[in-house]
Length: 122
Length: 356
Image (cartoon, rainbow over all chains, first blue to last red; front, side, top):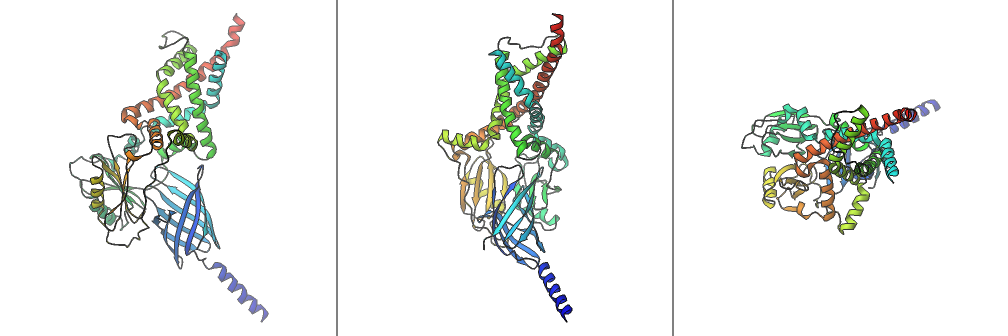
């Protein structure tokens, strides 16, 4: 009986751990391109349905670009924004109210990377 | 005094010669970046010139249909009838013949040869250390030019002697190339310093001109992709052009990507700030949200723009870009000939001493 209870408990805990975190909400923060001098502000508005992420992102509330190819797998969050010449590919890890990771920025001739840090504000 | 200047000229050059050469080689390539980029993608770029272009909306629809319904992020119409239009998509940039609507191909975003060249020129590849090295190298280049002029002045050598050994040839070449390129070299080095120390330079320039950075266009709240009705992209361009006669559109940002139409217009007569005309329009009814005119730029912004145009050679168009490209090659010649002079001098001096 004790073994069975322990087994159920481990299974429940394991399942909870695998369940995707909830990313829905407003995420504020900044990124800095490697070798850059400045932090660029970020405001990401995310809506999560299952493992799919939609919404928009940009430097502030009035300049937003639609999130494309957004997904979450465990604590691994990925999505893309296209602002025109530049495409931003986000590769983040979520930890409760923090998301940190890297952005790969690609234009027609250049590819750069940036470190990004976001905090859930709502 | 002359010995002090000579040592200053020598040591600044020796310390930074390798980096200055990198900037010279990469700069000579970047001076012709648009032409090279087109040459590398000639099959996507060049079209048979015709007088009429199809509407942007038709080109966008056609591209979108052929590429699985991808949404258009922005349009980049060319200002030349023999250069294709670009339709920017999330997956890449589609090149389309504006006269026939033919899709010429799609270029994916990512690093290319020209991207590496630019990265080398601006930050030695990548990282803050490279950027710091290069901006101080630009200072060293300016010191070398000014000290070099001082050293040249007593002899005022303006030609290369036909007779003489390699050291003599290097010495004459260094003098002649240096004096003939002193003005563009000074301009390139000085403008490079301002670009390298942009924050500090901008602070100083705004302070000296008692001006502020020009405010960017105001924006509307984000418009969801499904919001309708939108005014047509061609109508947005027509409204924008009517507000700025004599300009041509070179970029139109779509409202789904940024919240409103932003039509960027080029004034071909203004090579310094001519591309800084932007009309922002409400996509729902076409009302003008804001207009940013190049003529309204603050004095500080104009000086910073002029500095950039001088450095890239855009200031007088192709002729000044050719001068900038050649001057960048002269930088390499100066670094090499200077190194030869120093190398052979240090090797021959003991022989000369022994002989005397």
